[in-house]
Image (cartoon, rainbow, N blue to C red; front, side, top):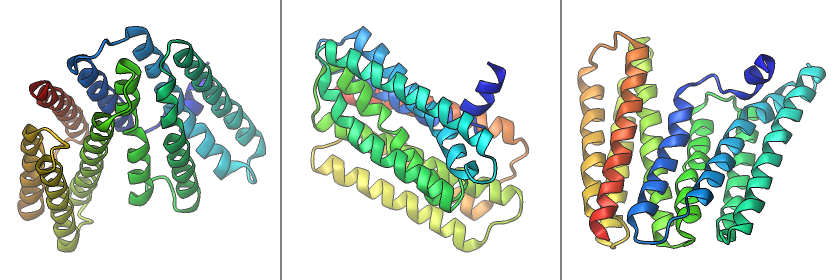
Length: 268
């Protein structure tokens, strides 16, 4: 089992937060939305999300190693396939519970998983484009939880995906900036680019609020994120402990999830 864990578990601990935070947002919004929430359906959705999450690393290993290390690649493929089977079985369970509408999310999930695996194989797993594609896929945990809990595939499902993907994507570019600053591998241009990305993200949230698609309170966290990015880009504050920094980011993600749920609760 220890060997299987090495194949399955991602090396980046932060990726767990990128998957679980969207799920918490979706589940929380389902709870406050006024629908009859199914705890069993939410549990099955969580198992499916975890299975797809754990399938990514072995399938990526299989793609990279299938020619130079065929035995290791074969083992990785078996583990990845097992996780896909688990996800499929939980999908059947959701169908039996009358939550078959959540299976519509399987199409974008499969597409984003394929794109992430292809980019990981061609560009490398740590390239920004690869990470952002992965973030978009992991953010589907939010609508998966919401739809499984409520049975409704509606504008709120799209909204929780959008804010989850945007928050996680901006967090990724911010973390990369801070790590580059710590290693003295950052240019002024990168700092400016990160700030611009945050401003564009904030503008997108404001547009969603103005159109009535997103709760107004969501302007607060994205505004604070933009301010934080500007301070980091301009002042380059010291980053003494990467471990502490990582735990801080996880705590902030949980705070964002709580605020997002509260923002939606005020709308219902």
